[in-house]
Length: 145
Image (cartoon, rainbow, N blue to C red; front, side, top):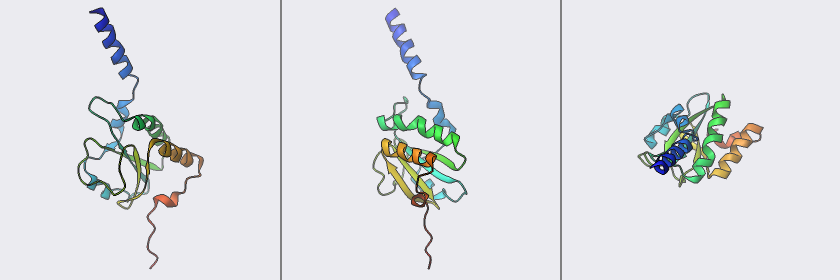
């Protein structure tokens, strides 16, 4: 009995080490068509496509990206972050979005650019912080005609 109680305490204490409450700090998108309503503000829009079940278990890449991304957003004034959980979103996802984690940049209701995978996402966040990211990638270019 004591082993069971100690095991449960260990499990709950380890669960407390995660930051699941940070997901609640951001707007969750439940239908892919909602993305079309984003990107008309002055701020740059990021949508984080992740995979997390009801128990708080995330895909390994999502686990790597979560805290650095949330810390990045908290430190930035130029970006607004929205979330899409692969397990609960409905509708037709944009072409090219194959797996989580993916970071999408939305401009004028269109996915202007996206980054697949934890490593490339973390690299892009570093480039943005260092000022070496090419922001033309995430902006829809207007037709000059």
